[in-house]
Image (cartoon, rainbow, N blue to C red):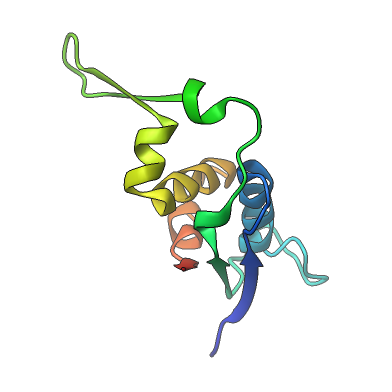
Length: 116
């Protein structure tokens, strides 16, 4: 059984718009045969991620926090730092948080691929 490949070109598109398009495609909501309880066999391929457009002052002002669980264990990084190191990981986390919180979320996110 082969997967349907849905290609998205990220050139000059806003990052959030791309993420919502990816999340919708991964769920299969663009298909006429959409059923929310089934995991579709769709693979989303994102190209030209390095040419994405940021609106406003997001690169300077947006920060991401993660907490280790210990006192004083909060780590803060700006979008600029994360985007320079791992742009795929930033987009993957955005899409992951847009997917429904259930057993299929981990399976669905594995169908997101990147190509430069």
